[in-house]
Each structure stands twice: as structure tokens, then as C-alpha cells.
Length: 457
Image 1 (cartoon, one colour):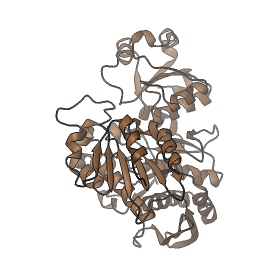
Image 2 (image 1 turned 180 degrees about the vertical axis):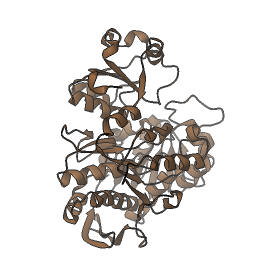
Image 3 (image 1 turned 120 degrees about the vertical axis):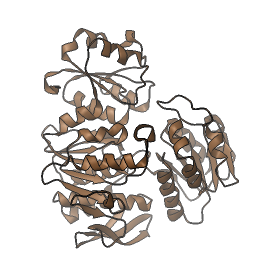
Image 4 (image 1 turned 60 degrees about the horizontal axis):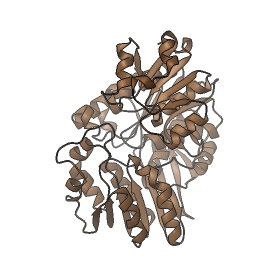
């Protein structure tokens, strides 16, 4: 690939959260960075403001001339989410360009550094951003490529030209993480997902097992105790409260709107930990991040300080509005298990409150494959407002739509809406706790929903 010798980097799908982190890295290195994405978003606008050229037309004519004119000086990076019909991508292949997946480029960038990879079908964005914040608190020399915008960093990327360590969110989609070679590997979960790629849940597990084989010599595997049985190599375990794990929490309680607990780290008691984020799953996530920091030699005092000042990630159980009357939370959950954890956390943190959920399913195939699981999780709500499926990279599938899904939901207070109707529903309803959930463009509606909730006060 010879990245160091190439001065022009062209991204097909630059607006993706992982792709944009790479784009920011190369831009910070002084490379000429350009890219295509389907639609203009807050993130693509930020890239443009940082000096990166972005276009939104997938035609051959829209490919920047510099890419075609300086072919030998160009690296083309693409995301597997780009459809096979993409005219610009296909033309570059026809012209003899070698196209690289994001994971290939990331693997090339990180293989010479001490690499911390955070993987899992759920939780990896929060854990990796927590690891990055703990490292920053401890003043370690590192870079980070995250799958979400860290509120502490105000970015999905942290660059350091003298970095000796690299923190990477390792994506299992399309088996991308198999391009990475970690020194420390975290596995948070291995639930069935991306069955359009894997076919079965067993194949998902098999892929994670293969990833553990990529550990460097003397590498450390840190696995959630719930999934540790899937791996046949030496490992460390973490858990919410299982005292047989190497890392776990004790005396979990809520004080002044924050979780307080003690952390057990391989038999060592670390007292006085606090986390301001709601959700027991976030305590479990911070135990994983603390395990990484502890293995890296970060002191207990710095771990406690880092957890206390951790602010979260955009769209990961993000508290948008919280006052005496109303709570509004936005979350990225798009799998039945993620939904279950999200709603269970709301029940735990806001006991006795009515919970209204607005959910946008993501992908026809995921809705088809996990319809019963989605219905079970959504039935944990008091009220459901369901949007149509966000197709992302897929074409419609006959019989698979939100009407198909909502008919399986057991609660009586449920309604299928367009995005415009959803806003009107929120406006007229008696809201106590509201959550908007999904990995599609429902995230672009957060400010509109926030205004409605704040106007109710």
C-alpha cells in the first residue's frame, strides 16, 4: 500500500463515522484528502470546515480531476456499505485503481504501534471512547480511531504524531476487524448480528474466535465473562458484578444522579469510582475500559479520575433534556439486545416513569432476521412510536416493513408514523421519559425533538 509515499487520499463513503476518523488522520498528516458521500450531514460539514473536499454525486463526472490525473499518487479507500451499483467506484476499478477497505488502511497504520482493539456486537464505541479518555487523563502518548463522537474529545479521532499506542474500535461488519493485530483485545459481546454477511450466529462467534488469533505475542484478551466460554486461549474476564471475574464492580448505587461503586481489579480494591452516565450497561462498559487501563499501568487514582470526568459519546444513551418534568434520551441501539439494555436501563434509572419510545428500524434484513426479538424488546415500552425502516445499503424486501414489525409488538399503545408525524405525536402526548432510538437518520431529528420537549416545560 505504501501509505507514506502517497499524498492524495480519496474516500468513497467519507461521511461514515469510521471513515471520517481516517480522513481526519490523513488531513492532520498534511495529505490532500477528498471524498464522496451520499448526503450532506453535520459530520461532512465539519470535514469541509477542516479543509477536506466532499462531493455528493456518485457519477463518474463528479470524481475530482486530481484523483484521475495523479493516479500513481492516490490511495482510494472505500466502505463496504457503498452499493455495488456506485458508478464512481466501479469506474475507478475499471481504470485500474486498487481500492482498499477502511480496515486494511487502519491495519496498516496501526501494526507498528502498541494496539488496543475494542470489539463486540454491542458496547465497543462506548468502551473505546472510555479507554481513550482514561489514557488522556493519564497523559499517555496515543492516537484513537473511534466509531462515535466522544464528548470529551469533541471528535471521533485523536491524533498524536509521536504516539506509541493506538486505540481502535474494531468493527465486525464484513469481518473487517480481521485486518487488525492487537496487543490488547477487548470482546464485549458476540450476539448474532449482520446476518446478511454471516448467515448464522455461529459464524459471528467463529469470526470473533479468528480475531483472537490475531493477538500479537504476549497479547492480552479481555472478554466479558458472558462470552468468555467462546475462546480457548488464556484470557482475563470482566463483569458487572460477577465476583469470579478478574474485573467487576461492588456496592453499585445511585447518588446525586450518578452511579457510585467500587472496582475490583485482579483482587485489588479501587474505591470511590463514579460514572455520570445512566445505564447499568455503562458501568459494565467502564469496567472493561478500566481493565485495559489497569493492564497498561494506569494508576487507580487516574482510573477513578477518568471515570468521574467521562462525558459519553454522541447518540449513546445521551441525555438530551433532563429537568423536573421531562427526560429525553437519544440512543443508537439498532439490535434487539441493545434495545433491551437501553429500555432496562431507563426502567432502572427512572423507576415508575412512563417510557415513550420512538424507534427507527435499521435495514430490511436485520428487521427480518430479528423481528421477534425486536418485538419483545419494544414491548418493554409503555408507548411505541415506530418509524419506517431505514434501508441504508439495502433494497426493499417483499413483506418486510414496519407494519410487519409493529403487528408483533404486544403493547396496545403503539403507532406507526412518518418522521413528520412522529414530531406531532411527541408534541401532543403527555411525555415523562422519551427515548429516540435507531442507527438511521432518526439521529438527525434530535434537535427538533429537543425543542418540542423543552417547549413543554
